[in-house]
Image (cartoon, rainbow, N blue to C red; front, side):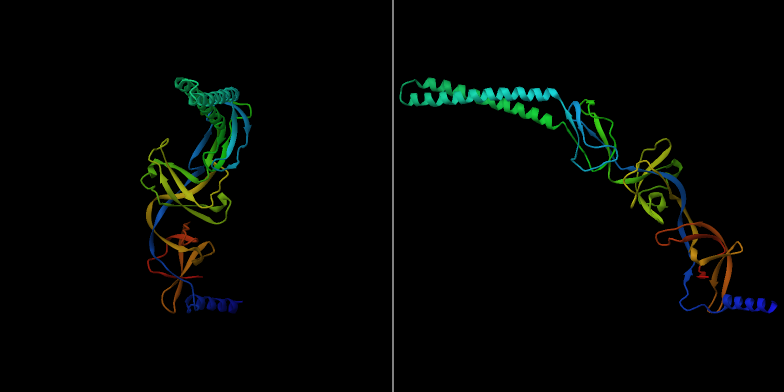
Amino acid sequence: MRVSVLALSCVGMIAAFGPSARGADIFIVELVVISDEKAVFATVESARIVPARARIGGTVAELAVKDGDQVVLGQILATVGDEKLVLQLKSLDAQIAGLDAQVAQAQTDFTRIEGLVERGTLPRIRLDEVRTTLNVAQNAHRSRVAERSVVQQQLSEGQVLAPTDGRVLKVPVTVGTVLLPGEPVATIAEGNFVLRLRVPERHARFLKAGDPIRLDGKDIGQSGLRFGTIRLVYPQLEDGRVVADAAVEGLGDYFVGERIRVWISGGERSAFIIPTRFVTTRFGVDYVRIRKDERTVVDVPVQRGRDLPSPDMPDGLEILSGLTIGDRLEQL
């Protein structure tokens, strides 16, 4: 048994201090400036929430959408009807029909009298009178047609159209609901969804547009880590908090108001960041292997910090102590 233990010890010394294998993975330790991250909660929200409003007053005759539906710009959401407009339209149709008859009769009279005037049977003043009567009838006809167009336009405005592409968040009316002009028929969240952060105002001087953020992909139904960028910091504080919008790819477009934990920058500091694969744990102690020269490597205990992944180093790990600048790490 002693011989076996001694043999194993010798093998361990050779592995620890012998030459490294060809093509060994080497990482040179550097002191880098990192963001001092803080965990905060953000909500999934639309960049803009737009109401679809009724342009005329009346009763909801038809409702074409419900909560959660996806809509496109110009899509008909509901139809608002007003019986008074229909009655006005019928009245104008009857008036136009009567004016059509008057115009036809005035045109006939004008043609007949024009012929009699040319043959000298009637004086020319009679022709001027019937010409005036024809012009009055034609102008009255045009006026009623224009009034009918106005009423017809009001009827067409009873169609409530989607003001933007997006998802219907809420429909506060039903068929038969009486509406006034300008009342909302549906609330639509624009398709451009963002993460809206609300952080304490003491972080206001650290938060700016262009700063990176990160979040766990499983919080948005994906795998791995996801990174985003703060695109807008609002200048007005709300209840002592700074409000900012962050863009994240693959955020989704259904649930609005969902809370997600994200990490943001709360300042900057210097730290040693290495890939996690260079650290191994034995009997509760973390070690890294440092190459001193071509023939000497040493296993050094280190104090592990927290994980600090980034797009360039997805398995980044902070080392609090045990390393110096320029150390050459080999994978254990």
